[in-house]
Length: 358
Image (cartoon, rainbow, N blue to C red):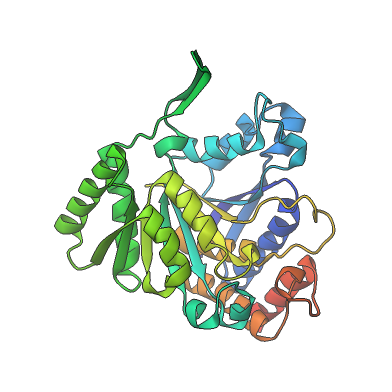
C-alpha cells in the first residue's frame, strides 16, 4: 500500500471542473489498488489574487512543499489580463515551479488512433506520432534579467537568456534517461548558429551524451528547422530536449498535432520533492461552468502523477488504458466530437471510472 498526500490546485476557469474529475479518478485508483491518498486543496492564480492579493499564497506553497504530488487545473483569464497589473495569475505558477525547483517539463504528444482524423494534418503524417518533449523550466530568458530603460529613441526593453552548465546537464540527463525507457532516440534543439547561450547548450549536451549515454541515438536540430519538421515528419522523433522558450513554443505547436489540447497532459519534475501535474490547456473562461470541458488531459495528468511521483506504473497504465477504451467506444466531448454527438465533463469522467472498474 502506498500512502500519499496530494495537493489539488483547481485554479481558474474550467480548472475546478477538470480537477474534480481528476480527484475522482485518483480516489478510484486508491480504492481499487489498496492505497491511501489524502487530498488538500489550495488556491492559486486569479482566484488567489482575488482572495489574498497574492497569486501563490504562503499557505498554498507550504502545502505543496509538504506534499508528495500536486494536481493543477489552470490559471488566468481575461479578468486578470491587465498588462499594467502589479501581479498576474501566471506568476503564481512560475513561482511555484521555482520554489519547488521543478527544472524539467515533460509533455507527451501522442496521436490517439481513434482521433487521428481530428488532426489538421493528413493521416499519413500524423498516424503513429509519439513524442516526449522535455523542456528546461527554470532557466533561460524567462528567468534572466529583464527591464526597460530610457534611450535616445524613447524606451529600450531587454530580456537576457542565461544558462549555466549544471542546468543544461541535469535536463539533458533526465531526457536521456527517458529515451532509454522508450525508443532510445534523443534530439536536442537549439539555435547555436546565432546564440552564444545555445552554443554552450550544444557543447554541454554533446559531452553528457558522449560520456554518459553512448547507447542513445543522439542528434541536434536548430529550432527553426524543428518547427518545420514537427509539421512535415513528426513520427521521426522520440524524445526532444530543449530550453525554456524554445520548448514553450515547440510544445504548443506540437500540441496541435493530435487535434485537441483536451487530450494532452504534462508533468513538471525536479531532482527531488513533489512533481506538478496539469493539463496543457488553459483556463478556457468562455466555457467555464458550462460542464462541457474535456477532462481527459487532467485524467492523463493524474496517470503521470501516479507514474512519476508515486512510482505506481500499473495504476498509471490502468488509467491510460481506460481512457483509450472510452475513446474506442466512441465517447467524445464537444472539442473532439467533430460536430457529432458529445457528452459533458462529468459524464466523460464517469465513463472512465466505469471502464476502470471493469
